[in-house]
Length: 120
Image 1: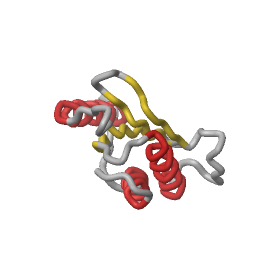
Image 2: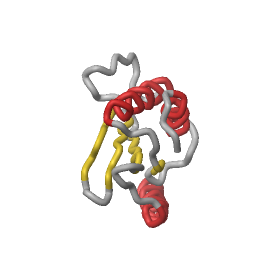
Image 3: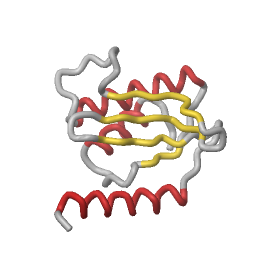
Image 4: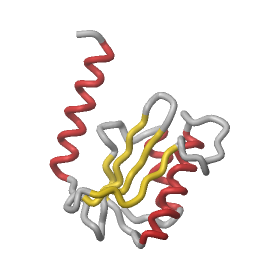
């Protein structure tokens, strides 16, 4: 097995383990994060209804970013998600890091969302 497919396999196993313990509701939705090499995406999901309540990413038209694959861009997305969540009436979330390690862009996004008023 080559290195990249092994990394993807490990991440999918971590993701499944995390998802076994986390469920989002309408009151406390799941904050699901996905990052690619160039972009970062985050959604607030009500798992019981199977609906996405709020979403934000570096690909949004209102996100004015110089670069999209760095910590500053992730922080901007975290703030944008928190403001959209407040407008939707959501103040508490359950954080789902999607199998990614909690450092770098994931940590930056989470810290910015916390500073903007989300609790998790």
